[in-house]
Picture 1: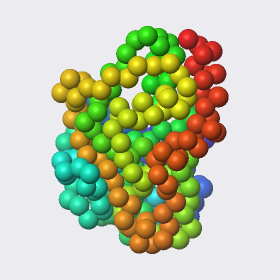
Picture 2: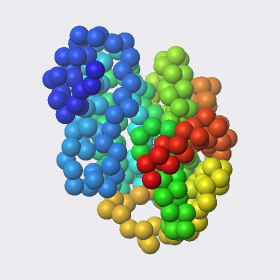
Picture 3: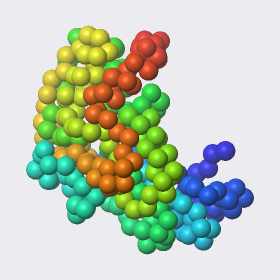
Picture 4: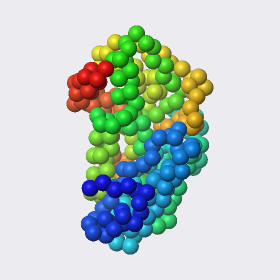
Length: 262
């Protein structure tokens, strides 16, 4: 059953009827540029987590909430990674709304786990890797300009789901960073992925200033899973290992998905 998080009463009534012991909130307004002018960004990213946390507190349930690297300014000198102890300082409305969601949860309940992740990709929905593949298949002769001065840890959604399962199993509380190990630039990720997919392509690096967007992006989104490791529940591997596993599992289907429509 699907619900619109903008309709708070309807969603709370559903929770009352189902009485879950655990809520995993993966929902978010992730249109980073759209968030600069779309007020529903705050309703989904900040207000909805707040009433979820209030509900879990009233009902002695447990809330697992997916957050983001965008709660940071991203100005830590690379290759230094951001830990859970680092000060936040979002530079976009998306980041500010997500941080407000984190703070609202912490104020409403103590039975929560917030997982900050970054650079997510998967076989379903829209994401950077699928966009690169679609564009490369559509016009192999057209060079793809990709930013090379933003760094982060590409993270497979399947592994994040496994990590959430571990957090729940161990009833871990607090804020956790949850990304694959290691880091790269968007340019390196595109080049690595398309080469592994054996797709003819030309990827050209460019700077952030050469690719302006409505919202500012963190230059350094490298997250270190310090608290997951301290709790001995970190399931993530190196991003290149997980990307290879992703391609082995979904590569053929992704090709067929785009070759059938281009």
